[in-house]
Image (spheres, rainbow, N blue to C red):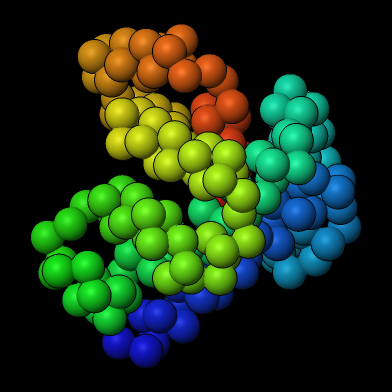
Length: 169
């Protein structure tokens, strides 16, 4: 429904804004709309800034993470799912299909071939290992091993992009 897509648009906008505020170290903007009693603390913000320092995101990594956060809500769109042959596709399959048809969405048309490759790599990594599930203690040892193997084979860039995306969500 259009209400659900409006909610997805708000989620995407919030995620994009969050990443930009984290990258620019704008705690004041980040907490502006948060109720004071449940506001992220300056200590928690400092830890997030430590993570940003460790990620040391390149312009390509930021661009890819922002593109991902822009398109992820499309996986819930009935019209997008219909165009791709139905709703039986996984979220990751839909995202990969969108990146294969890069002209389908403006967020992908702005990516270079290497950025599209990094986006696809990040999506494939997410299929193997979900950081949110890891934080909730839901990953199996085999998923952790598969994650380690994929990072060893393909490098750490997709891992860092995925972390940047998760922090934005």
